[in-house]
Amino acid sequence: MESRKVAVVTGGSQGIGEGLAAALRGIGYAVVANSRSIAPADEPDFVTVAGDISDPAVAEKVVTTAIEKFGRIDTLVNNAGIFVGKPFTEYTKEDYDRVVQVNLGGFFYVTQQAISRMLEQGSGHVVNVTTTLVEYANSGLPSALANLTKGGVSSVTKSLAVEYAGRGIRVNAVSPGHIKTPLHAGNNHDELAGQHPIGRMGTVEDIAKGVLYLEQAPFVTGDVLHVDGGQSAGS
Image (cartoon, rainbow, N blue to C red; front, top):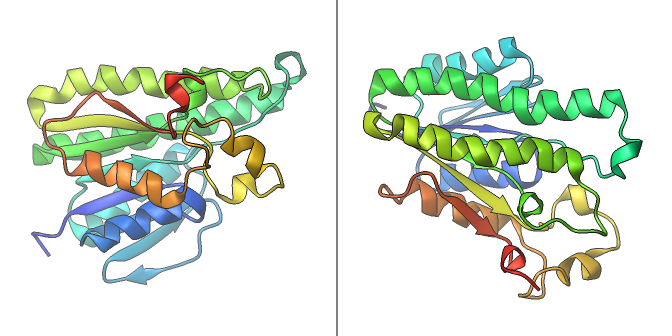
């Protein structure tokens, strides 16, 4: 039990989060996964905690569950996020509040709790899932709230990496392009694929490989790894 690494994955009930939890279990990690609608599970290497990660009490429960069940937290993957695509002037106060609460509040509360535990251990790794839209704005896909919030997460990745580099904690990010998940369940896959120079949409496996690379690269911190088929490089 002492040698097993432990990861926390937010937004872990479907899509990228579900794939990340499976990938980490696949390399021998115990995983605590959270989302609002995640199904109950209490297995030797997998526990779920249902609830809204933007609620500080839920964030605390996720972290304390990892400690109580597995004794430590080695990796936190901040995958939970909301995307609301609208022209900027059409966003409502409700849109703003919800996106900020989840994309920033959810990140803040659980990361603060997890890093506190990592400091006690003297080691740890935080991986934030952002979006290539932060750096590669698309006139056909209005995304101001995503850019505002996930852009903040990309920026703080570097800040936290520098702040904690001397205390054994790494902080990195993965920046996906358009990925085949339930979020993109419509019939516009060809259009989305065309926005990547590689000519296809990404898969959950592509993102999982990016996270596993960062997890297994001990000299990498403060990096934003683009897993976007070349989208951030241009068109």
